[in-house]
Length: 303
Image 1 (spheres, rainbow, N blue to C red):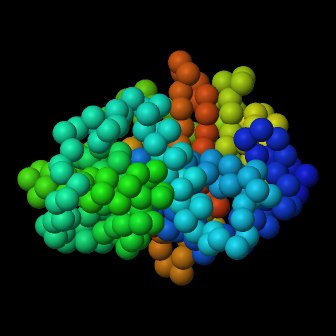
Image 2 (cartoon, rainbow, N blue to C red):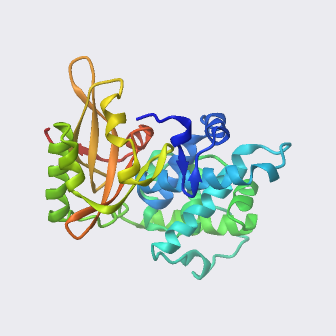
């Protein structure tokens, strides 16, 4: 689904070659940024959306960045702020700002639930600030000073947040999944989409979309579905593919399967939003295979 350079568009206009070069420069940092944002938002796909917004913001501010400073903390701070914005817009209140604080003199407790991936999947029970502090300390191994700068706090505030978070995690059951119950209407439309897409029935696919449907092919295209060379790019994709209905961390999606030597394997996901009986928005992550690699649970229906 690669497009010519003059067809690249960002959220508010054409992608520039310089922006794609910037993405290439920070490619080694991208997995860590996605991992952090996915755990902060509770969704590997929401996390990828937040990363893309953060990287575009960083690109716009690049001329003001002090080149003598390391790039990674700067990018993480932008991504962290975007995560907080996302959570607020989703209606999650930052309880960490209003909860009764532990005295700052208390030393941080030892990690009571282990570190690394065990922590990543439990932090959704925590308010955003505590969630961020645990992830940055116990998963990404940032120092207290670095965390304080990233979350706009003090070392004492970070210690208190870590203490509260670790105590809550020790007492809590595994993190509850976000409620993404399947809409039967969505499942029916997605199955039609899959069947027609796999048959290359492009006119049939168009019939399922609204007149003003929007398409976002992550890092490649954002605009009107009707104006995108979407089908053409799938037809010339360099390896065999097919679509199937699937579920990623509890959310129903369409999964792009890649044909290997003797089996089909999940490669990427596509999200959909409905307006009435029509598809109103498509977000295709085919250029971001790391999204599925970061998922906690992935199931694919037999295609």
